[in-house]
Structures are given as C-alpha cells and as structure tokens.
Image (cartoon, rainbow, N blue to C red; front, side):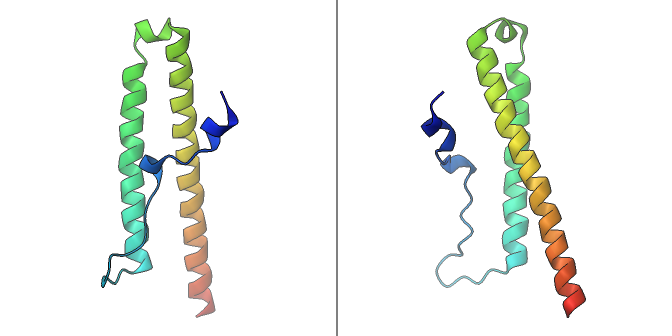
Length: 99
C-alpha cells in the first residue's frame, strides 16, 4: 500500500462546517450536526464491516485485507470522536469556570 493512498483526504468523510450565504449558525449547532452526521457514518460503516464478515470473504486474502482496512478506519474514527467529545466538554467546562 502506498503512502499516498493512506494520506489522501476522503471527501465522503470530510465535513464542511461553513454556513451558507446569509445564514447564521452557532458553534453548538455546527458541533451537533457534525457529530450526528459522523455517528450516522460510523453506524453505516459498522454495518458494512459486518456484511463483509461472511465465511467466503474470510477465506479470501484480498477480502481480509479490505476488512482490516475498513476496521482500521472505523476504529480511528471512533477514537477521534471520543477524543473530540472529551476536548469539547473540557473546553466548555473551562469556559464556564472562567466566566
């Protein structure tokens, strides 16, 4: 696997948080929408991984490689969301304490 295939940005997993023209959006709304979209994507990815775990795929080395890659992306995404959620809560707590 080349380094380029690992480091390229996947637009289906990217989130555009910029509001539309003339639209006012709060940071809270942006975070809620981003987390909701990402959660839906994670659930879809989990269903896809579960579907790929059929006995005939587990006997195919190429399919096993795809399953491992999908599981890696899924695991990293879940870990990122957990870290982001903790950071958001910590930032909110800090802001509340300082006000």
